[in-house]
Length: 213
Length: 213
DNA sequence: TGTCCATGTTGCCGGCGTCCACATGGGCAG
DNA sequence: CTGCCCATGTGGACGCCGGCAACATGGACA
Image (tube, rainbow over all chains, first blue to last red):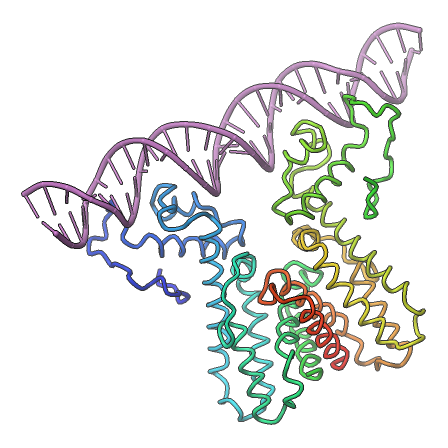
């Protein structure tokens, strides 16, 4: 129930005392997003179905329209959840490593890249939905999963591993590499690759990306 | 009408003399795929709608079921068309360049990569549909767009530009890089990048990919 | 205590994918 | 040339979906 991924919606959440059924749900918006996230996990964006989500949440269809303009609006929330979860896993992975600037600096870059792909493979539906949303979300610098990657590249510059003049564009290349690899594994020609070979290919990709920086 | 992209379906195409309406269409399968490709071009996979395709083709709904098991089956044909078109454009682009092994060898690699991205940006709906299909199509070596890329990398080995021991995995890295870049431009954080900056980023990506090989 | 409006409900519409029974007529056997 | 057959196309029906509109409920606040 208490999912780790959860943006601002939790604010103003009214925890009602009576757990029994009541006319006013009290927290329907968040509950619907939770259900929709489950749908997306199970079958990607196209599995997010308003009527079914309402049914599962124990509420009538149309109740959702008090909280979301339309299906795309709900989908956008699911997308945000997916993005947030991706970012969280990348940050968590980095936190497990020795602090920034010590140990092998490129190890942190490899770690975020690997975690990115692993998340996509572990949660294919949520990953796809995170990017399937057409809403132009705010891609502020330093924010989101993109920001995590950028931060690690900045560390590489700070520690002298990456020449500063090579920094511009490096984020796009790394991001494109791991994202493309993930997509190819999910729905492209690398779909049926056994796990071991996939890891080997991923290692090769990370090698080449690092070498090309 | 006579679209360049067209797989084996054209075989056994019966060109009837009377252009007027007739009970039996004579070439419905291909006509439906043509219409579905238009739909995909305009709005991606989710815009491929059986009833609407039949309507546009001047035939009743349900007629399609004589030629396709279900919607996914039609979608798979559209996907094949998209893949074939992508491959065709990449091959055409290579043919415009000096022959294999002469001139700058890496120029051919850059050319296919650039053409890959340009196709995705020029035909976003078709590109997305090409990869959105869940059907495990035969990814035989040397076939399809993947094969074009592989061929160019083989040329690099043959001309001594790329050490043979570095060849394994190089195709996956390059493919992932350009595919990821295309996807990020279509629906990711690079969506609203103006064309000039996009080309600069693409140049940077190709630089780094080549350097990392 | 009484009212109001945010929230949830029922009912409806058109559209879609898909199944079914039926209609048509081109091609082949005789 | 004639008549039958089955591949192909038609019309209708069902259940599901997204999305309106009108109505019901009851918590919050005066």
